Image (tube, rainbow, N blue to C red; front, side, top):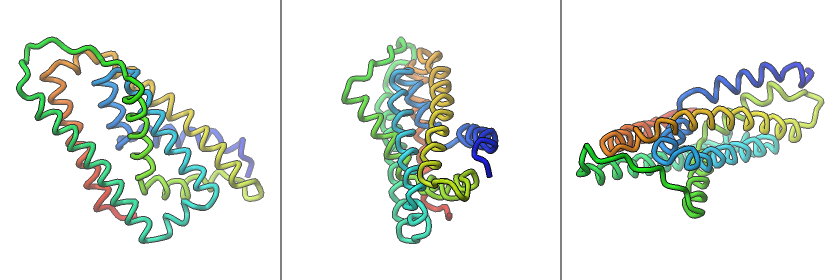
Length: 215
């Protein structure tokens, strides 16, 4: 199997998979709506850094060990569920905290992310991606289809991971930019409160789904 001949199919599959709703989409939408494009960039980069770690793990065989070990998979699933539940509860708390603001109050400007907030958002993206057990299963089920049998597994997997990151980064930044354009509307007190409540519900639901899902 020639790697170059399979690249179009790989890129199309990555594009379709990346566009499917999930924790990454929910995080990026919330950050872009409330903090603008500059606030969503570290979240996107963190998610992609976590994804590349899984790609390297897959190339080295570690992802297969996680997927094969029932204990490791359950632990990772529980951690992933807790992370999503905590993020959802934080969004609910923000919605509850802002409930007393006047509906007619002017929209806030998107805060510029300081260094602390930048690394916080980046770390949030990394943790959400690394605590996703489905990422390990995805890597060992999807990537081998495009790795030549006689080729270097680790190097090829690392290259495919970079290609997936390039596609996802472009897609997620485009999503963040589109959402950020309506940021002034999203940051109106009443709309922001509803957005926090809805995004919290989505994240909690995803956390519950991760907790009860099987492989």
